[in-house]
Each structure stands twice: as C-alpha cells, then as structure tokens.
Image (tube, rainbow, N blue to C red; front, side, top):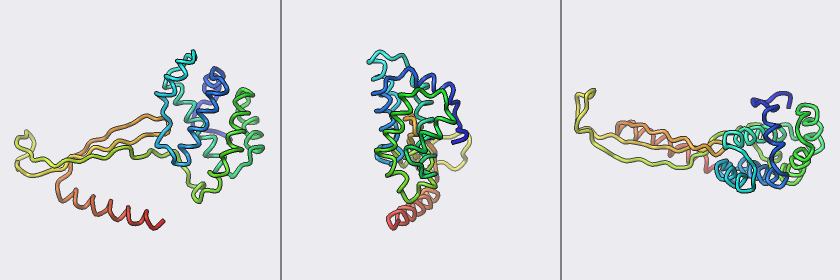
Length: 197
C-alpha cells in the first residue's frame, strides 16, 4: 500500500465531504465491481444522488475516489490482508483519511473482502474494463476517395467498454470480410477456453 497511482491527498479532501452512509454505499459498489457482479461503478448516477442529498461533488472527483478505493481494495486482496492489517496500513500510508472513512473501509472489507482474497486470481486482479455492448453490421462501399476497388463488402464493429469509474468508451472500426472471419474464429476459440475455466 506504499504508493498508489492516484493523488491520495486530493482524494482524501473529496472523501471528507462525503457522508458516511453514502461513502459506505460507494465502497459496496466498488467491491461488487471487483467481484464482477456489476460492469462498473456508475459515478454519474452516484454523483446525481450525492447532489440530491446536498453534497457538492462532480463526477470527475467521484471517479478519483472510486479509483483510489478500488486500488486499496484490490491491493488488499492481492496481499490477502485482514481488516486489521488493512486499517493499520491505511493509517500509515494515508494519514489524512478521515476516521469515519477508515471505519467504513474496514467494515466493508471485513464483511465482503474475504470473497476477493479467496478468489483464485486475486493475485492477478486489475481494474480492467468490462465489455458493455458489441454490435456489428455488414456494408458495401459504393464510393470512396481512397479506395480503388469499390463494391467490396466490409464489417463495421462498435465495442463499448466501461472502466471502474463508470466511464463508457465506444470504439468503432472496420474490417474486411476475411478479417472478420478470422476475428470470429479467434473470438469463438476464446469463448471455448473461457467455458473450460
């Protein structure tokens, strides 16, 4: 827990402004995300709920908190920390964290952290994005400035991925039909491997 990729001093200032009950709800959603029970922590929705409760916070600040707490929980899972060890390490590394926030983190970790530490790949746990949507369509080019051979079919694919903070990124790309067939066979092979795990 020596150093994280986020500025904890700025994040602790944000956490200080979040009431204990809402912070607990946020931590529970982060644990659910790390357990792959939800595709992402929806910072936009949470931000709206916080603002409705009278807390002045923007989605980008809430995303910083999500990233920091995700880092804390995933590091604790990798190191198989007990709730006492987690509290001790947090007390030494993040001294500015409010006492109520430490209590919430310890309580949530005590209640739900075991499932993360017992996970077979807790060692390999990373905050990777999750596939939210995958669409494809077949088309035929009829005019182009850069393409000499028109009337050849192509496949347009759109992939949406959610990161830990709930931000959804959409990527669109085109492939020739042979490239799509190769992609399909690789995707099918990945699916069969995942089914055996």
